[in-house]
Image (cartoon, rainbow, N blue to C red; front, side, top):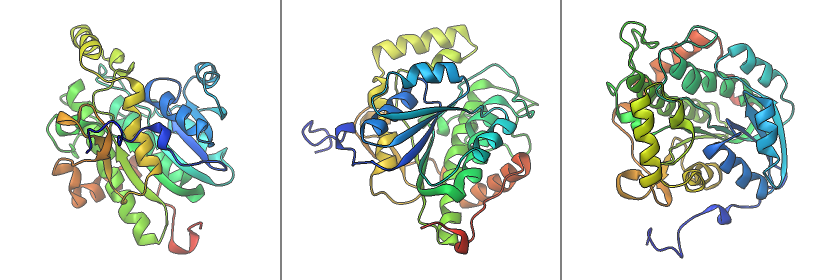
Length: 305
């Protein structure tokens, strides 16, 4: 049934989102732009949270619906705080989509390894700072590659200064996204919040994310793979949209239903044992609080209806 084209879920099945506001990080291209466009067409007011507002404005002009562009650099915690401080009123949906992949060793403005700092810590801080405004859910983008690398978080050296490997660093950041979602949902439930935390991955989708790897041979291989095997970014955005709008359990993880979760219709999928470890999730949360200076802000009496 999942492969029956007449029953496959796609963006035409989005509910009416009129009156809702959504933030999509990295919405200027790829999966982020596709997701932002679909949400806007469904009636949401979509904020493009992007590092380069000029590129964000150009992207927003391609979207039919209500949009605005705000600057957000996830590799700079001062930018994350400024974005959150500028937010006013309720926020229905936060999509933590932006990311970097397999970069040469470099650091964020705050001294974190770039992939761990951007993909995880920047979104960790942004989510905590916006949580008092959130009314529906947080969707964080992970990857099937969360199973790679060492398969665990290196708590002794999360910034991998001793033995940096770009693939291992990327895998760690994507594992961190899933552990963050797991612990965020536990805290939301414990606080009595109606907000849900979910994760999604696009499968093998052709986007410009792969073009930023510092290895020219790997970049060429990924470019060929994009042409021969990958689904397009519209299909790659479907797990994000499904996680953002469907009635799913908190901490659920959405990906394609095809072979190897590389392509197909969105559905709930499994994750590695390490990504399901509540002890590691709590330990990562504590570490992330220390590194970013942000905390989970909600007590049961503070939750917005």
